[in-house]
Structure formats: structure tokens, C-alpha cells
Amino acid sequence: MFDIAVFVSGGGTNLQAIIDQIADHRLCGVHIACVVASQDRCFALQRARSAGIPTHVVKRSSFTEPASFDQALLNILRPYQVQLVVLAGYLTLLGPDFLAAYKGRVINIHPSLIPAFSGTGFYGIKPHEAALAWGVRLIGATVHLVDTAYDHGPIILQKAVPVLADDTAQTLQQRVMQDAEQVILPQAIALFAQGRIKQEGRIVRILNEI
Image 1 (cartoon, rainbow, N blue to C red):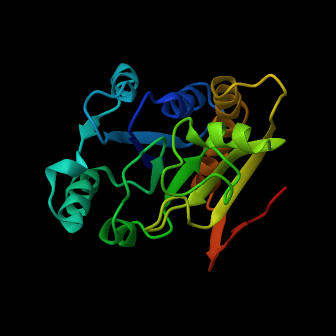
Image 2 (cartoon, rainbow, N blue to C red):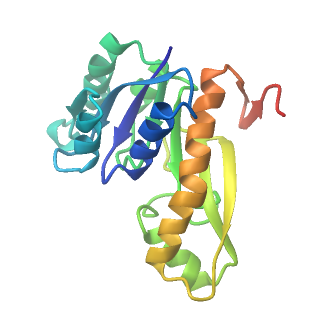
């Protein structure tokens, strides 16, 4: 079994998509070992508990030093034998100690086609608002490896979604979530579970791609 940890900060819709795809065997051989939240009031924790998944809350504000925060996260994950860390709407920047411990094994889902509408300040509905303000015809989602900057690591998968003439930021956000994020995030997890991801510098290659 391929054990993953899912890190969350909000409602947990992408977490729920992973839970559902594991339950209906679309995502085979994967087990969510635990869910780690950046705050104790996020609804994602309820989703995890309803599915019988162990949960933990680690607040960045509780630590004065980044290294102490990283160590707290590592201490939580250590008993679970986690093979991949999945950031699913997780809004806290991970430090170098954590990323070194899970080098090449931390991924994030971002609601845009990186590098567009990404980086510091582009989270939640903000990429969708920016897409409408710029009048772009396509937006989408990206799964990428995580480094020490927001939305900066090597790209694994992307999926485009059209921007419709009558879109609001809310309708666009919902469609990107359903048609892109909840498609490519489980796909990326499956690729890792199958041992099909190989990183070569900033390029990620998918082995035995069909």
C-alpha cells in the first residue's frame, strides 16, 4: 500500500475527491495515512474524521522558528511511513528541513496554469478573479513538486479549462476544481504510487506514458 499524508487549510474539497476515488477504486493501492491541517477550524478535518482518517493540527503561528515548525510536522509524520505528502489547499509555506526529508515527494495542486496567476498572494479564488480581470480564454490547474517558494517547483501535470463569457470568479473556481484539480491531483498521486515519476532538474518525466 502506498501511504500518503494530505495537508489542508480549508474546506477540503480536493481531499474529499481523493477519499472518494480511493473508496470507489479509481485510485488503487493508495491509503491516506493522516491529514494535517494548518488550523483547527477547517472543514477538511471533519471530512477526514468522517472517513476514519487520523488528523493533526499544526499551526505555523505556534512556532517562532521555521526549523521548529518543520520538525513538528516531521515528528507527526514519522510513525505513518508516509511516502508522499500532498498539499491540497494548504496555505502554509514548508521549510527547507521538511522538504529535504521528503525530497521529490511533496506535491501541490494550484488553480491555474503555472506560471500564470501563481506565486505569493494567488490562492483560493484570487487566480480566478485575476483570470477574469485579464480576459484570458483559458485557465486550469497544475500539479507540481514543491520547493521553498510558492507555486515554483517543477510541473508534473496540467489541465486547461475554458473561461466562459458569463463566468464569475465563483463559477470559474468551481469548474476548475471539478474539471481540472480533482482530475489531475489523483492522477499525480497514482503516478507516484506506480513509480512512474522521474525528476531531472526542473523537468518531471512520466515513465511508460501511454
